[in-house]
Length: 125
Image (cartoon, rainbow, N blue to C red):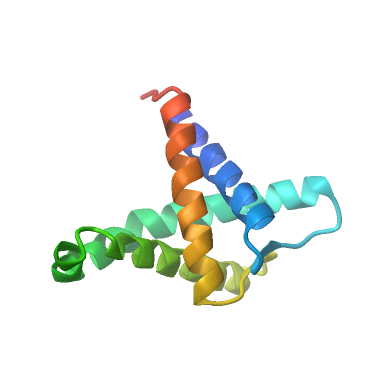
């Protein structure tokens, strides 16, 4: 349970950095508390999307992953961020990605920040 909480907070922090750095990846809200809660909800949605859909997408795109030496993973990350935006919209969560370009850059930022945070944060079972 602690590991899940740490990973969710790391994803929320990575999403916050992406919304700060990438124009077109936005969290709206009236105050800091509302934006923080929105980021945590989006991090949960992002975690579920990455847990359920991403492995299937990676499996079916295996030839492209091999052909591009893994760089197609960046496209998959962008698609996961766009799917997270769509699910958030369906659940009336104030998170929006404006298109593939911002999703690609946002996915890149989220991957780098999440990797760095997972290296620093303890891995507990």
